Figure (tube, rainbow, N blue to C red):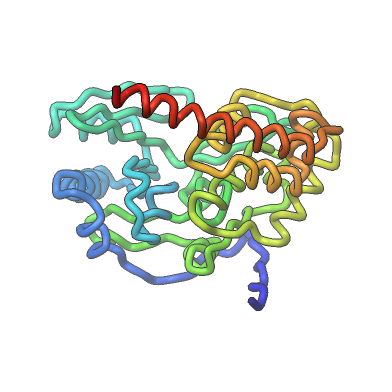
Length: 295
């Protein structure tokens, strides 16, 4: 297959890349209760003079037409906490707020909605917890891990369902490609390498060539040798879960030098042997448990 050229991304570009409205797709994708809630959220946002957007993996899965992720994350250009407080009484919901980050959890009868004020992040040093400042939706999307997760859907009444895509994320979804938004992405957060490998397997996408090169370069700096924070541990557990091929994923992490986070001198070939042996034992155990349950 002919390789698709990765395009450079600039925060200076001011106009979204596409003009597509997903209102019809949203009505088909979400249940009636959720769709009605989103319409109401847009009306409340318009009344308050704010702009409300669905963001994150939920937008990606909507475009793919996958129902894997039913979580809804909303970003507000305005005050997310005040927005959540105004929306909650309509649905007899409750609100848990975090003033420092301008975020709120709206707890409804059957769902919890994460609502955040649009913000940008600054990393004082590699893998640091970021400092947060409130910003525009564009800057909020620019801080995301990959272009496929950096799209937004407008909920406001006058533009409900319109996609906001500054970084060619829609095109990357169509080409089934995982791509970072800037060259320091993995320096800021090395966990993104592990997430890229998991999404590659989960979605059947491919990590872009330049993105792969940036992952290797980040790991070769030596800054992340023996670096296993809680986020990486959580992502690694997902990668090694029964939903994924552990051997292939470990091999992929090795190719991207991400195993340096565990041990820089780790021998992938030895790990592969151990995992394959463990997999055989696990399969045998499953049969034993099944036989025992049928007695």
